[in-house]
Length: 93
Image (cartoon, rainbow, N blue to C red; front, side):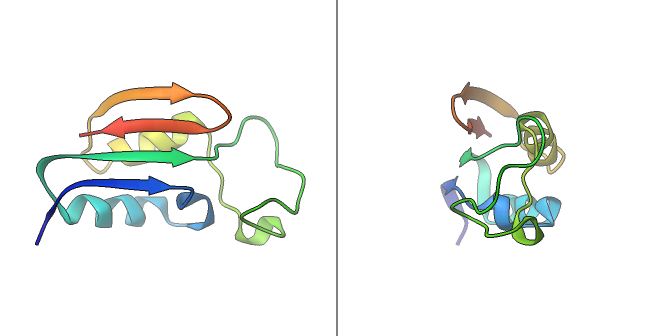
């Protein structure tokens, strides 16, 4: 059964294959459903490890906000809004 909406919070920074992640999310959503994310994003340079989601860079796959949005849009989602703060909060449909 497809979903009407999905929210992902602090998930993708541990996923190396973002395209696959976002394709799978898209696959389980109804047509016109929305997808919202809240993610840590790479600002400039690597973070100082350890961080809450990874002890080393071997399991941390941060992208910039632009690269994250691009990876999501490449799967067919349309960007509908973004709020920048410490990380990235964005909505797609």
